[in-house]
Image (cartoon, rainbow over all chains, first blue to last red; front, side, top):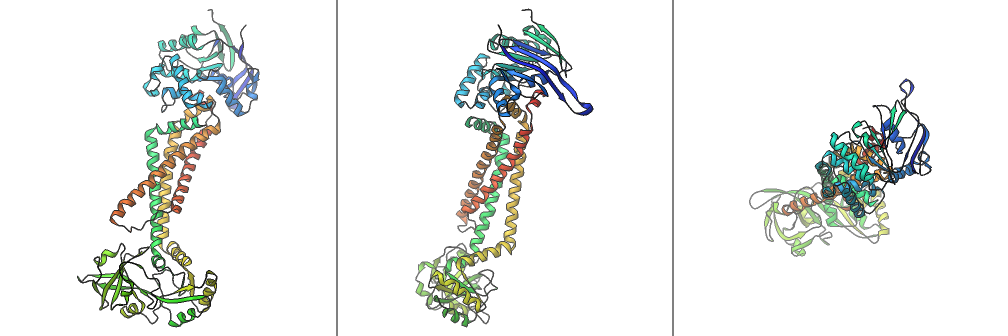
Length: 231
Length: 378
């Protein structure tokens, strides 16, 4: 029996006011289990990123709830919400958002440093996770010296170094060529996904659909389809 | 928190161009601020050189006197009246005036002449060479060995000169605590010789130097002088009055204040703009930190740490640079009129902290406004 990692129900989010008011999310229900890799797909403006932001405790919905570990995320104070993001969520941003002036290891160590871990411990852990993503030899380099695929893997190492339950990837293949994109997602599926972690991926890229356990399709702020992987 | 601050430090320092720009801006600003204020203090200190060197605790003068250099002669009876005032241990006349001195090589040089009371030589300087009693010798003068000494061709004991067609002889070389402001050499002689050699108006007592019996007697002496139509001031009050004159009634204070303000504005502009650019360039990264779970107060700490550490480093460099320059200048001009005091160090420190606070505030405002959702939207 699968354990729920995140469960959201009745999510509604509006943007704009007056005539310009548009519904980004319209009564969206979603759940994902530990050990599951879920894709959220759909055309631009369909509400994928808004849904990801609401689920990860970044964007407050107008109504609805997001339950993680039996707690409604949006009932938390702003500091507790920040702690929730820090401890429960690992982010891989579309543009990676690596610090160009920090070494690869220091970039990966950032979530641990935010958790007030000792600097040397954080760097040592970061190097371990760089080893997992195959970049231990690049630990002392600055991100500018890395290829796009390598930067993506550094961002993945940063997302998982704090051992979060939920990993969120926003368009992970958008800046990569087809082969590298597939290699990255395949790597994540094989090495990062486990029974204690759920991965939510927003993507346009149909070339990586084969790695999903479930694909949720969105359109105009609504979930319009759910497709389960045959594998 | 230490790890976050280290992170902030690395983010700033590893951006070498920005960090260098910030440091140069603040260093230059501090250098100018400390230079201006130390020159100001140096000039003000020199402006009271005669008062400091003579050292009398109470000075009686005409109420119209603004600085020690523009004395107004007082009649003899005032000296008698002050001497007979209750609480006065003793009171002596002092002459100060300017004269044109002719050197043996035919060159003329302006000098400042101080005439000490003949009987007591009260306010006499400490001698490096010669004996003080030789001041009573015929035509005897004591020359002060300060920055202006060379303008008299660095005379030795026995050297001669002419002062208003009178012969003068150097009988001693003195050292003093403070050099004068106006760049002219100083000569000491007796009061009687001074008024004999130098053309004077009717009244010749420039100041009356008073030794009170005790500090409690000073208010009574002040009241007695006021009743006579004159003014008695303690040494410190007199020095303060001279400082106030130069600060508020001449362009010196205003000009140096304007220069200091310009230095502050330059420093603020350079560091503020550079720091703002640094924040703008890293705004998405700060947004990513926020998304990952950094709290607002942690981001504020990071930015304030960055601005403050840069400001303090620039402060140290600026002070060091000015000290180095002062040291080099003083190898050539030993009495260069600049003084670094705790007060002007504190003043520059305060202004640097304001620069850091304003630069930091601009950055903090920008970072607090960014929404993590914007990072997802790109």
